[in-house]
Length: 226
Image (cartoon, rainbow, N blue to C red; front, side, top):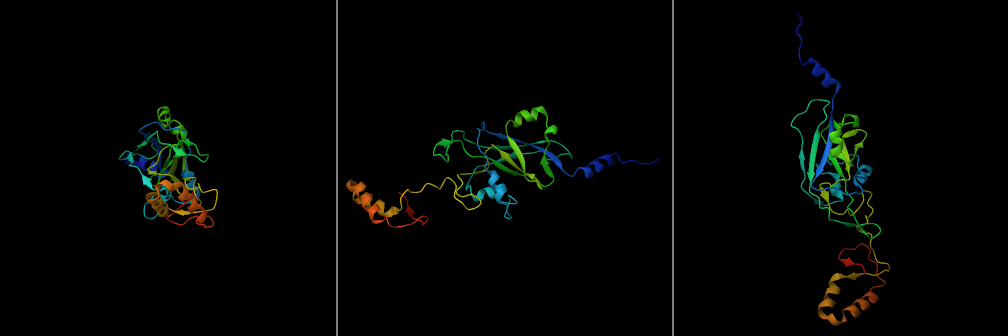
């Protein structure tokens, strides 16, 4: 009588399926408003969003951070759909200055890096209950060959703060407000004028502007535009 390994079918299945499909569920502490997802810039500028030091490339432009909690199963079987729950605090009252000068919603999005071999579950594998939880969130792979790295939005990420520059080195709309005329003034000189000649503050500024009007200082430290 031939002995059969009752787990042989599982080994064959594991050989056929080397990845585990993942349904990523993003839960935030409040509802998320409609906004633009900025991780697309990371996709365009970086082949891999994680540097050799372990830091995610979002931190190159967004310097602030928020605590992030992630909840996943301790173990899963191959070819299994499961939830990865990420919790990030998010204040819906926060606004930013848009390109047109008006206040609007934050530009938010997230890059989620999973272990190699994991990828987003196809839509036909996601149950109606999970689809209802996912709502309007959008998911896509970071690269066709990096299916374990997901770009998600609109949802707040762990790195916060207005981006100072774009990946190509150009300024973001956080730093494009310059003077309409040439001229520069040093802050310490203005402060001295304010303390000693309070009554002639406006005149002092006007005189200072005239004296420095021929100067040019677009990016020097310690100077500010009018």
